[in-house]
Structures are given as structure tokens and as C-alpha cells.
Length: 238
Image: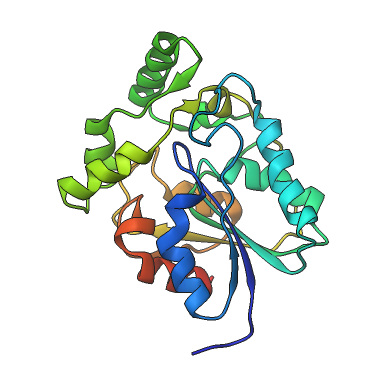
């Protein structure tokens, strides 16, 4: 059913670019909506991971929304993308309709993403960044296969993994201000998402932090590839 046309800005997670949103963007466009899928600084193929700070990513989100002169835009962030989206939101208050966090981190005061992940991830990422020579993290296939895209055949997992770029480690170690009151928000959670293990470090704490009830979507942390139709429906519901 086609309702009013909305504008969506889809903000990628770590290791990904705007390309990761393509199956979801196609669903949203088919429903009559305008969709922008930027690739954030430091995450283009061939980018130098040492060139940018998290603040540069925030500036890029603000610059896109202002540059396109968007009004009543819904911003959607996946995973780490919750950090730049949260920091950009106060600067875009007049231009945004809502923020939607999909299986995303919701920043707390003084807490970078590094402080929100289990010790085994902290150890892994610190070691990979130190060994990289440019303070970046290349996601190991086995980790990603088991916990991030656990609902896809291996051939698909390998194809998507091959497109991923190293994540600048400073994007995980720099904090942003938490979301101020008064900005409408929603949380969409993929029910099969075990990228953060359930329990103390699980995703459910982030909807609680926002003070909202999560909206369920099908699939894993990579439902943008494995369940794009169900994910798009959940984003529209949010």
C-alpha cells in the first residue's frame, strides 16, 4: 500500500558502505519513498583509515542532510551507525522527523562503542588494530560468519565479507554526546541478531536506554541482505 512519500537516510554500520542498504532501499523505493544511502568517510573502498575522526563522520551526515535540503527526513542507523546518527541529530533537529536505530548502539555519556562490547571483542579489535599498521580493524571472516551473518549460506557470507572494508579503530574509541530529549525515536531489533551475545552485552539494553519498546524484525545482524523485505517493513512500521 502506498501512503505518503517519506524521505529516508540510511546510515551504514562498521565495515560497510551505502551499498549494504541496497536491497532495503529497493524495497522502500518500491513503496514510493525517497532513499539516500551514503557511504561514510573512511569507509569508501581505498580510504586511508587514519585520515578521519568520528567527528568527520558526524559532519558528513549533517552535510548530506543540509546539502540535499532534506525536510522531515527519517534517519536510520545500523549498528555502529548509531554513534554518528546520534551526534548529528541535535544539529539537524529542524530537518528530521524521526531517528530509527536498527540493531544499533545508542550512545551513553562518555562511553565509546569500545566500552559497550564484550571483553573478547575488545581484545580482538585492539589486537587487530595494533597489527594493522594503520589503526584499522579488518573483521575476521570466522567471527563474522558465526555471529553477524549466521542466517546465510557460506557462499553469500563470503561474497558480502569480500566487500567489507577495514573499520578505523578510532571510530570505536571516540565517544559522542547522548541523544537529547525531544527528538522522536524508535528501535528496531532483528530477532536472530547474535552479533552482541544475549545477556549483559545484548542489544535489548539499547531500546531500554532510549526508553522505547523495540519493534521486531526478522533475521540476523545482516538482515539488510538476508531479510530485506521484513526489515523494510519494520522500518516503515517504526
